[in-house]
Length: 287
Image (tube, rainbow, N blue to C red; front, side):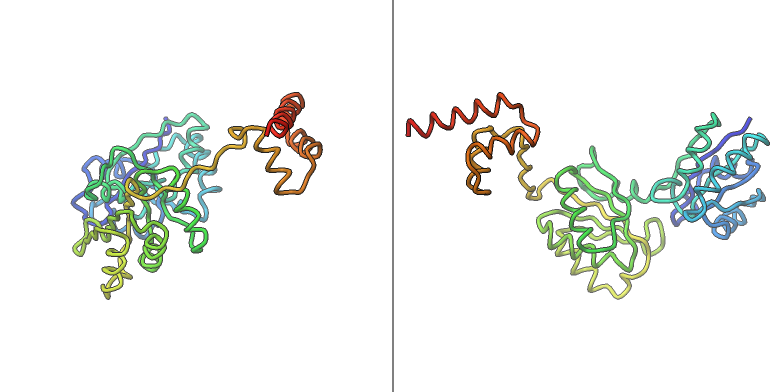
């Protein structure tokens, strides 16, 4: 029977790879790899000779469907890998997983390394609740918008970033959420593994001072528990109709009758609006 194994690979230190993961690749009929060259090197180290096929971000939509069809037709066991870490977590693989599930092909995880979880485990923050955002947009205005979204929704945010953009990202965080706390990890499990902790301004200073900042991949853990959060926008439904009538008249220069029509056109119940107008008239009369 066909089966898909989602196999985590080392993010740096080969000693982190489990015997089960190696055996899964060794026993599979085919390895679907993000980059066959990278996985081929891993297979060479562990004496694995299973054939490889590429399944990366640029072909996985079509490759996932065709490979799942082939698995079903030929009863293939396939091991899905990424270059480093767990497939589908900011890495390719979800198309193939979905295609298999839609065909009733069993999908089984072979867990292991994940940069986000590794960074969380050493951040020193309260990690009982966190939100994973992966890679943020590249444009600063889009980053600012995403950070505001985090402030409104998350307590602890986990972000991936490239070495070429990490300084700019931390700079935006320092501007937008200066009172937050940061733990920024680079080259996790590798020889030059490093984690910077502190305020966004402190981490930014350390990044700028390091001539090797533009090397290695980064995982940021952003603690927002002490950050100043924006006041939630008051829902229109929570604002009394009387106040909304007054706002329509003063802000848009409308008569009371026209203000009533605007609220009715906006979907408010006619009788409720009329009652609110009567209440206003009585308030003005008693004033």
